[in-house]
Image 1 (tube, rainbow, N blue to C red):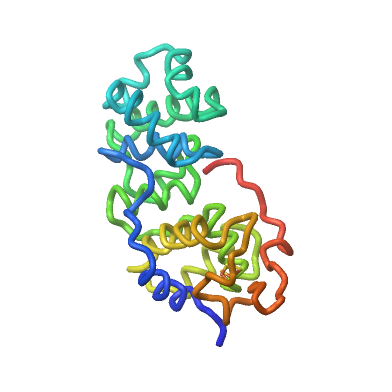
Image 2 (cartoon, rainbow, N blue to C red):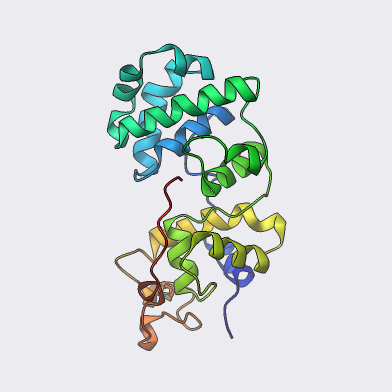
Length: 227
Ligand code: SF4
């Protein structure tokens, strides 16, 4: 029987008990900054930088704006592409101050107006910081596994998100991303399909146990500029 996002979610819920998000944060502003820093960087590295350098020093949007750009760049240096990330953080903080009275906005429409914030980042912030299900964050793990498991035929994250949203009740949207990340890290990595150890080895259309080809490799994902 073909897998669906609902059957995948049920199976993975029995295997993993992930946190709401893999990024550590105290406030919605912290999470906004952490998600901007996490582009092309591991969550572990971001957590080290935010907890030892960023969070103790910056508590409000104004804190990020009061320092010189070079100082913020230095503070986030080890997260990679630090000039662009520091620029996005400062521009986002300026917009939060000017348009949203210093509060991180709580809708998809408003959040995606912030520099460096796409639907994926906004979905993470809305679900983890505000408990709102307004979308499914399609990161590299969700994209790859959705293709391999046959949950979507598309390579574009937006189309994949629509396919997944149609297969899942809204209440489950926020849980889907961390569960697929957990499975994508533990069993079905980008380089190595450990199909023999996978709970989906029988039904998965990419299962190497049955000599099937990797469906994710047949897709060419569309690159997004923001996270
Ligand atoms: S069966 Fe293989 S390809 Fe399919 S999800 Fe499991 S590890 Fe990935």
